[in-house]
Structures are given as structure tokens and as C-alpha cells.
Length: 308
Image 1 (cartoon, helix red, strand yellow):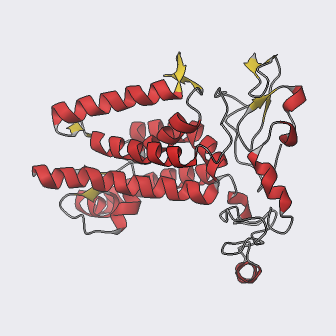
Image 2 (image 1 turned 180 degrees about the vertical axis):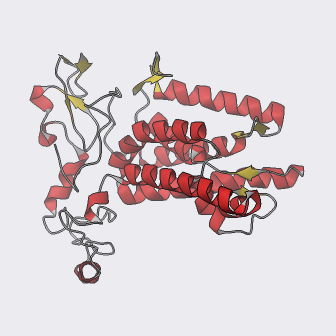
């Protein structure tokens, strides 16, 4: 049984909106009945089915993004159609799953290159290190690289459940910027601490970016119910506070690194998420109050600009 996010009615067979991630009863299942933020897209028939990376769909006809007619023509000629069924159009509200796929592909490449070329080449390509912070490519690559299957699995699970909620709140383009920028800044923050303390560290993983996502949800959907370790129920705000408290304790008592965990990077990502969530909380609709695990939520890859 679930509770409708609009009226609070208990519903045995709830409806889960795959665009905004909310849970609703039969009376509020339609987008117009629960104030779904995706409704604003329908006010621009010429741009609603574009790539989704242009948040300006509306009176400007998608000016400045893939909705621009001239740019769309160029992309179409390159075979990158942004319309329904197009390659780029499919990423609308699906960037979370694209990032998950990139993480898996990068991890496979890590293992192949490690076997072929050894650890020195592997570290130079995939880790952001205090020894070579000038390797600019590692600022981005390290966000999608991971140190072990368990490291990848835990980050992938968190991204799968929390990423779509934030992506549907802010849009795909802003979600991409949040994920990549927070991941980069978090890694650079940990490297900066190492340079100050004289330590040698090599940072990799999406944990900083995921902490930013959790920080956003802690502000925009603080009462969202989640299951810690799939067993212990608590709000996303409580879960975020617990993670922050642990990271602060570990950072203070262990100089920022505990068993290979970059705690300062986690805290940096969290601060970015809290800051961004505070900026947008009054401009977006509140998210769902519960995170359903299973076929009904948090959703899965779907067509561009589509309501189920």
C-alpha cells in the first residue's frame, strides 16, 4: 500500500508517474491532476520532443539548445535526430541510465588497460591524483571510473534510485551539469587537501557526484522515505545527515582518507548538492514522499518527453 502525494489517500494499486517520480491515487494519476512539472513542455509542440537538454522550451522555441531549428537540421544531417525516436531525443529524462552505462563501460576499459599496460598507465588515465593534478582529462574520467566491482555496484545502486528523481526535478541538462561538475569539484577538493597535508592520493569514483544528488533531495524532498541497506526505513534527510556525520568524523580523525575512502570528496559533493537544492527548492514541485523499489519505481529508461 502506498500514499498519494497529493491527497494522502492510501492506495493499494498506486500510480507512479515516470516523469516526476511521484506516487498518486486514481483521482490524481493524470499529469494535469497532480501538477506534474512536465506539463510545461506541452506548451511548446515544436520543442517538447527535442533532446531535453534545452531547459528553455517555451516561448523562445528552444532557442539556444537542440530545439533551435538550425542546429536541429545540422544534427539531423549527421544522423543525430533529436525528434521522437532520435538518438539524442532518447536521452531526455534518461541521462541517469546513460551515466550508469558509461560507468560500466569505463570499468571494463579499466580492467582491459590494466592487464595490457599495467598500473602506471591505468593510474594516469583513470585517477585524479595529487601527483599529477595537471592531467585535466582525469578530472572527468575519474568521476566515471571505479576501484573495484563493489565500489561500482554501491555507486550504481545509489545513482539508479536517486538520480532519476533529481533529473526529473531539474531537467536533463542541469542534471548532467550537477553530476559532472560536483564530481570534478569533489575530486579536486580531496586532491587539494592532500597537497596541503603532503599526502599522496589518487581519487576515482562517482561518490562525490552521488552525494550532491542526495544533498539536492535532502532539500527538495526531505521526507522522501528510503530503506537503508534495503531494510531500515528513514527519510532521505536523515540518511544524508548520517552520511555527513560519518564522513566528518572519518575526515577529522583520519586526515580525509579511511581505508581508501575520500571523505572530503564526499563532503564537498554534499555541500554542492545542499547549495544547489536550496537555490531551486522554490522553483520546482516537491518530489515524491516515498521511493518505491520494483517495477513501479523509480522508473526506467523511457521515450523522450513521455508520460506513461
